[in-house]
Structure formats: C-alpha cells, structure tokens
Length: 258
Length: 198
Image (cartoon, rainbow over all chains, first blue to last red; front, side):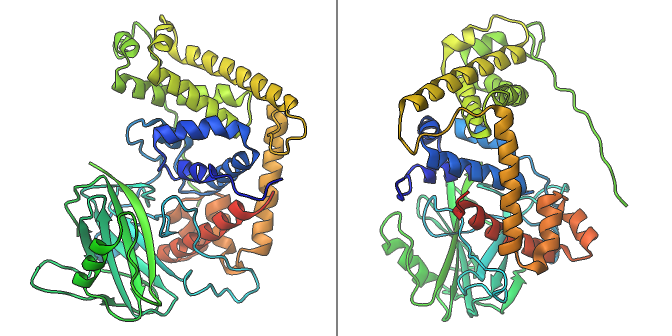
C-alpha cells in the first residue's frame, strides 16, 4: 500500500471545518467512495465530531458543502458579558499553524512526560465573540461582521510581547492589540505575562471583506504596527509575513457573515 | 441535582395543500424554498441513506440527493405532490441501494487493489464495528495520551457530553479552567485520532 498521503484528504478536513466550497465538495464526494485512505480520514473526523461537544451538527456541515445559506451551527451560545466577564462568553476557535487547510496541530504530549508541551504548543490564543444566553459558542468557521471580539492567550512559551491583528482578502489590516486609532502614532506590541491570561478589551471593526485571518504573534521583542503593516504589504500575495527568529504566529481564518 | 429536560418539536410536513409549501417555487428552484426543504427533511433523507450504508457513504448519498434537488429541475418536477418527506426518503433509499451495488461491483472487479474500500459489510455490522473501534480509540487515548489531571473534564465534556456550565459545576471548577482544559484536550484528541492508524 502506498505510504503517500492522498491529496484529497485535505479536502476531507476542510469539509469538516466547513471551509470547502461546493465545487470542491462535489469533487471530494465523487472521490470518497474510491479511496480507502480518504474514507478512513472521513470516518476519523466523524468520530471526532461525535466526541466533540462543541462540534456543529452534521446537518449544518453538509449544508455548508452544498452552499446552503450560512447554516447556523446547532450549538448552545454563551452570554456575552463584556470586558469584565470574559470567562462567561467564549467561543473556541480552532487554532492551526499558518497555511490553508492544514489539519489541526497544536501539539502532542505523551502521558508520563511531565505534562510539558513544546514551547510552540504552549502559545495559543482563544478568540471570543458575543453570543446569546444559551451557553458558550464555538464560532467555528465564521463570525459576523459586527461581532465584538475579545481574546485570551496562553503564554507557556515564555514570550514577552503579543500583537493580534486581522487581515482580509483585500489586505485590509484590522488591529486588535495594540489598539491603533491615531495614524500619527506607531504603537507597539503589548507586553504579556506568562500562563493563561485574558485581554480586557472587546474590539469591533467595520469588516468589509468576506474572510478574515486573525494573527496572534508572540515575540521576544516588541513590534510596531507600522512595521507589521509594511511586512504584510511587502509579503507575496497568499503568504504570511515572517516576524523574525523566535516569533510564534498563530493564525485562524474566518468567513465573515454580513 | 440533575435537571432532566424533555421537549418535543413538531416538524410540519410540507404538503401541496399546505399554504406554506410553494410547489411552483419548488419546481422552479426557488432558493428559499429549497433551503427550507433541506432543513425540514434532512433528517429523513439522512436516515434513509444510513439504513443502507455506512456513515461516510450515507452522508455522500445525502449530499447527492440534495445536490440533485438543488441543481436538477427535472428531478424537482418529478415530485407531483403528496408527502415530500416520504418522497425524498424513497429517493435517498434508492440512491443508497444503487450506491451500494455500484461500489460493491467495482470492488469485486478490482482484484488485488489494496486501496479499494470494502463496501460489502452490512449497515448493522458496520455500525457495530464502528462503535467498537471508536471505543478502543477512546480508551487508547485515555491510557496513552490524556494527562490524568484532565481526565475528569474529558469524561464530563467529551464522553458524557455535559454542557460547559453543567460540567464546571459537577467538577467544582471555574468555567475558564474547564474551557482551558477542554481546549487542550480537544487538540490532543484531534491529533491522536487523525494520526493513529486504526
């Protein structure tokens, strides 16, 4: 049996993250019955879906592949309590290394290894969005353009600074941390503490794109917003800029609902 | 204290004489009508397909039925009236049977092709096999990967499927602590399941 991974397995993963467009969904569906590797992947993803209490219902997932509406995930949603009560309003978003369609990979700790993750694994961000009173919401693959976003981070990597920004398909950059409201200023990364922390501000931008890629960049030295914007604009289209040695860039993509 | 909730939801049938059902719009492929049909009859279609096929294939057939409904005026026009849900369920079952015949035949022709999937197990055998396999994977995950300190959260949220608030209360922990652990467990579980050979 070939040890090479079938290229279509990436589409299987994207189906489950609801980021596969209908044309690619069709191709995946036609391929699936003929490929044991992809069927095995599909079945594994089904198992994860059954176990994950926050997974979207299959109905919503299959609707997404059909291009049917913006099928709302059948999840309970948490009340959004604002900046002073972040713990009560959380949407877990899947974190993945930079790169489209890559499977989830935030680290692996063998039992008995002292519980320590690699430093990269220990740097993460949780994105929160306002929701209803029914309980926490996993935002999944989409946010609304008018959502206020709040953030918590984990800094087990011992980094000293953090920036959080979003960039859409037009390369418009939206700053979450640091705040940047005066073009004459050039604010720099926020200083961060070790461990798991919540950031205080709920930030809303007037998003005008259909997709938003959030970047949380952990560094040892501060970055300035203008230097970051320069890096973004000079990076080849579709490529994430690099922020220097030792930096950790956590990214996640959203569809932006109107 | 355990609070048991029970609710029943009456799902309205789409019937030609029901003022809410727009047969003409359905035939014409009105998007809103078709999306409503999807939401109201998804479960029937999925169950009909799952009565014949294993889960992955059943979802492919479910997708195919609704894809045809969305894209084929001829298919929509073949529904002349009556219980739309029952009609869709029959379409799904027939399509599932065709699917099973087709891929079983293709498998039998592909001698020695190691990658050809096995379509010959019955749905019952497949479901039993899947459950056993899933239980073994979960058990291996617990024994070899999951840090013991996160075992209670794994059990409460992933196995018992308690809500976050309910789980936090049951475990006597802050909700943010539970969410952090759940996040880490989810990452470990995803990596374990997706990268383990079954």
